[in-house]
Image (tube, rainbow, N blue to C red; front, side, top):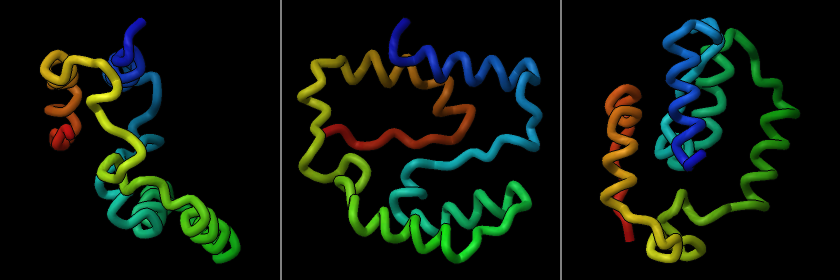
Length: 108
């Protein structure tokens, strides 16, 4: 299996109706990184659920304590360190990106 096995299986499962469409909420990673709490509220709303204040507070506290690196734009992770071929990965992910309107991110 390669790094795209999950993407392929996910698209196939959706195509076959394994997971009912009303149980799926697509989230763009860049949107989540830009505004995690608004995105979480959107997911809860899409699922017809309320995000209770205590849970929202716990999520905010976690985000404050674990700021990450800004979604890959920070200094912790560099694509160059992976040893992977960017062109081949972009080609392999093209169908997924087209289907779910996922923009290509810059590679540094």
